[in-house]
Image (tube, rainbow over all chains, first blue to last red; front, side):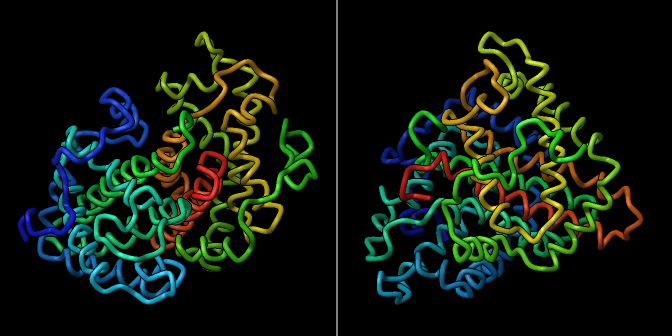
Length: 196
Length: 196
């Protein structure tokens, strides 16, 4: 699927808002999650390993959400009916998100797009991209909690390449850092002004 | 060190505020980080392995902070001078935090104390417990980012017991879940009312 075919994927477009942090603050944030050029290399390697498995990863994540009504509600109408078109449109972007995460270095367009992703989970922008009638925001605590499942469930897919255990561990560790980095960036619209 | 000797440690005391979430929401949050009774067992086991190593863990974490001026400033005067007494008082509580994390199940007193810990990082309560003149809040993004170093650096200490690789992995995984769970709870005072 080319970028143009992904519904609502606006990476690099002018409509994307500014990032709340500048490059200097972003570098300090990367230092705080111990993110280095070696992690960038291992993420690119992870991208190669995951290339044919993106749908399997998404099946795992969607299965996890589907198993938990308290999560599935955010893809459903206020009455609790899952919205298939919404699930499918988000799924295409979620797959691209894996590819983008595995394609560092993270430049200004990438940094700005994290703010857009964050906003799309909050009452300021949820449902707008896909023009759907769903619950109008995802509580912050589930955004933060998702760091665990999105990190842990990736491990078996990274093992499906030709790499030794140490390299798999380094790819997984780089993925973990990239997830913490991004969830931290997505949190900005949830946080009280001046406290981020 | 008994609880009474830990400066500013008020776990279980009446001064501790209510939790913003009830038991039902807490159970859903635990489900979201895939936290089970098996994790509780492995955290208790981790507590045994870490028992004689708490100071070494704290040396590692304090070393990481000391190496990064953008983090060290939160233990320093507004002019940038590290406050030794502040560092020492927090250190005693940080050690007890490791012990408390390794002592599940997490009851109502534990849940309430997470809110107190969160508040102590924000402008609503930072510096008060230790009556110090330091920077008056820690930006949210560093709280969130710390999930990585606090999780990753624990691994070698868990390896220092008599347990096989699989058990070490399970202890570390339980620790990772417990850290995500707690940072998520500590985030509440940072988040816009109604969006948590």
